[in-house]
Image 1 (tube, one colour):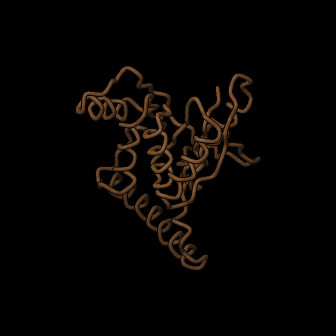
Image 2: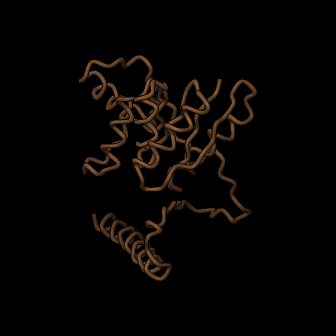
Image 3: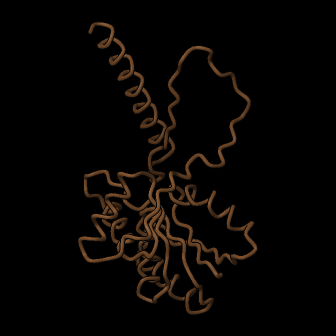
Length: 202
């Protein structure tokens, strides 16, 4: 199988890397890897369209919800290349561009990989609302932590909270980013202290 595997922005490509790593080790799959144009729907569409015409893939792996990935998905859909959509059905209920793009990709896809039953139900409702098949929806969990390699560290003996943090968008300067990170971490820690105080007075 010739599998089209576009890579988008860093927040998306990190999620796809564990899948890509395993596909590279599969001798039945020939990966067609390429980088999309960050933040550019039409450019990513045209790039994907050109690669499809030149390489004639059998299937595509579409991931997450970024605008450049939506361009790649649209090209596949319009040119008849079936694809799977990973992280289908996620919803944050505020109607961002990524939310709408994600649901469009889910509607265009042949297979949907979901992180949870909640996401899978959202995909079932979405696809059935327009008469599309719901028999290729799979709950597969997340890929975020598949290949995490923890450096040697001391694990506390008492209970603790582990916080993983995704830094703000890189369109900030390093000084602005440092300030935002500091403010957000201060809020996280102050909120935890407040929760503990409230629970101790309850």
